[in-house]
View 1 (cartoon, one colour):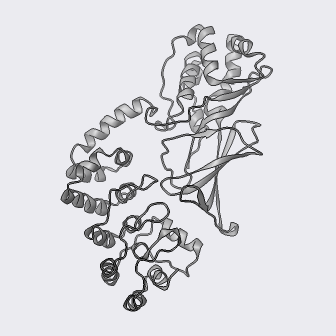
View 2: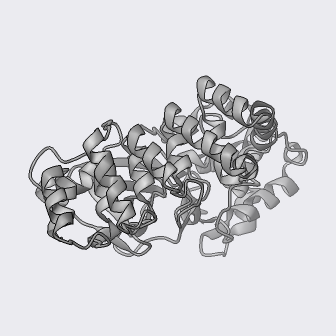
View 3: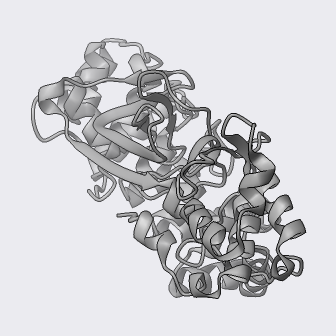
Length: 407
């Protein structure tokens, strides 16, 4: 890290002025892609600089910071001297994004006035306006809407699908602000909710193409275990609403794989019980974050904390009802699957039951979303519809929420 970047990170204005006067390189970039403007846009660290504390400073989205007059003068001077206003870190965030996260209203105004891009998306589908909408930064959203009106870009906000989920989750006061600036926001949101949630979110939620494969013991009909197929992604750090599933293909010595959060960049490791049952454990090592697409930032173990969520997919996907179906309707299912080495797909089970159980031929449709919002894979949704049709006592069962206790 250059002396100029160190001074910018500490917000040491006298030292910045001295280094600039001596001709320091204002376009220098440190690891993780940060430049002098990014450091000045975010909150300064409270203690001495370390990689761990620096990471926490960046991710501390609750700490509001406002640049003082001297900092704004220096930032303006740096921009005039050629500091890159659109410099991006390794996940595509600019100085304006950092200013929004810190709720640094004066810096946002300065950067917008200097022409900073506020609508362009990073590889993780984030933009300065997305951060402002997500974190309910009312004043900053107002600044950006005013800038968009000046630039003739309000229609871009209204029609961009990636803004819609944040608008759908916005507070009433935020909706009032957006409605005044753009118009038609509430009506469009109501229409999306009617269509999206009526269809259980399945059309907008991509999922792996592979079928759900099960271990189904013909000797123990109550035992049906997940072996592969789409499972849930959950962010234990910021509760990001994922619009995709994770393709589960079993494990090697319990190691399943992992996924990152596109919003807070946290990384989650998936571990199962070496395929002995249908439980999958989601682990978050505090301080382990996605760096770019294929790398992670690791922190010392003694400084790390853990979060864990265990999901029992036999319960969540109602696979534990097969024994009850067998006892009530005989053994058409298990007779059909004998000699198959105990493996089958969930779609095959649905097909056999619809053929052999009269009450399963006309399937009722239910709202099987978790918490009324999180859709399940289409194959699972169809299976749960069938279970609730032929086992009416399952209709009031709250297995989804019992099994998935999202913090």
